[in-house]
Length: 124
Image (cartoon, rainbow, N blue to C red; front, side, top):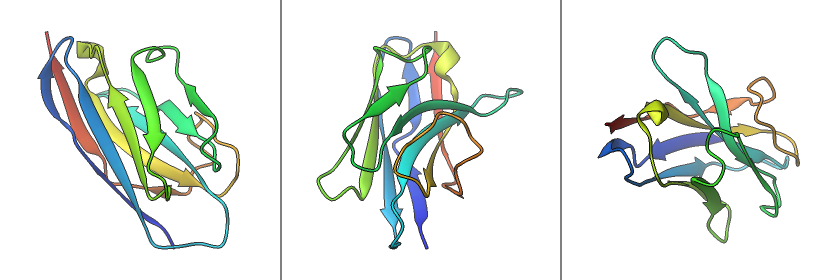
């Protein structure tokens, strides 16, 4: 059974940076991949970035490509989302999630375990 805990959110000005962390608690025999998602007020939750179970491949939404970087520590228990050149439209609650597969996806439906989220606010 996995539990995910996000941290690192906050308020920054446009052009600033934040680094989000997602700590994976617990163990499972099944492989899993991690994704980052966000939900802005009045909008649907959307995929931002994801990383395969091996950690060798990452994928990004077009809206964040070149500005956000996903990484993880050596044991794969902490996953990061480095967010640079932040824009007001990046304001949202950010969630990490795990899906029980080797490959990852920016689609929400395959993800089974979700954290509670961390708020990111970018002011102009």
